Image (tube, rainbow, N blue to C red; front, side, top):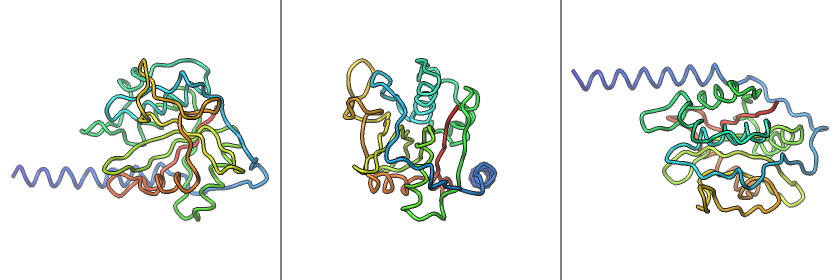
Length: 215
């Protein structure tokens, strides 16, 4: 009986996630090519590169975006305590990030990019960043899922400027910073970004998931 209950609960959870997935994602991904700049970035100083606690990449990235736009040092720890839509392993479903951003007066777009070519996925990110938006994507590494934020790019050098809350441990609760004067703490090429992004997803859903955020 207990086994049957577990199976039914798991099945319900999968159906529920499936419904949330299709309800949340916008239907069209419009790219305005005339808006794409050669480079663009949002100011994100190195003192904001906090290193996350276990399975807290979701709220650490929402806090990063709120800091970038509101120019205030909100607490990643408090965001971790208050975020909703947590799974038993403490992973945060995308709805939790979306809700927390909206609660902090950040407008969001959830574009459907699955049918875009790899080239057009990169162009979409560049176009939104050119318009002063920040980006959060869900990707995969080895045996775990991970959110990162993108705060800028330079197409001439094929670079995206990333805040990775699991980057190398630094001092005083921060990560190390490989980006110097540029935003974030690590730089990805377009291919590195695509490889990370295509590995994302939760239980078969939320593949190629992206939040476009702005004021």
